[in-house]
Image 1 (cartoon, rainbow, N blue to C red):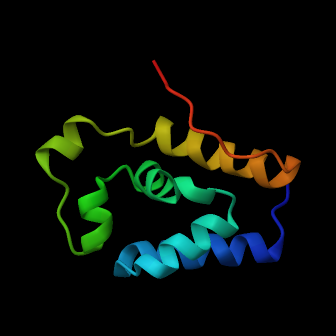
Image 2: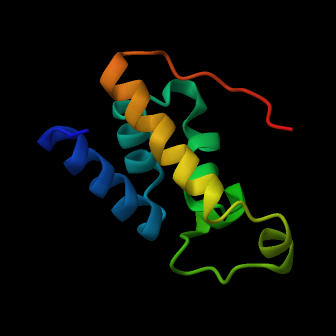
Image 3: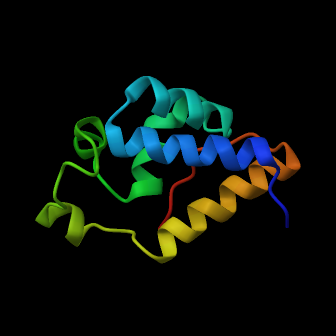
Length: 100
């Protein structure tokens, strides 16, 4: 699987926005990557952080005990990356699905 240049740049810019708490950038680049109106959820899943931490800037906010206990780091983040790649490559619409 090869990701195109625009996708890679948008993904990098999204992470820059997440680190700086640039909410307009988070929304803009999440939408470009296919998250649509679910961009807040996408940002939380991607970073495995709470929306409050995303709003403050994940580089400025220590991981809370609750975030650590409820973390989906590792497997969850990888799943999110793979899902996003599938959405971009197939043109599939991103959907919110419950996970049990």
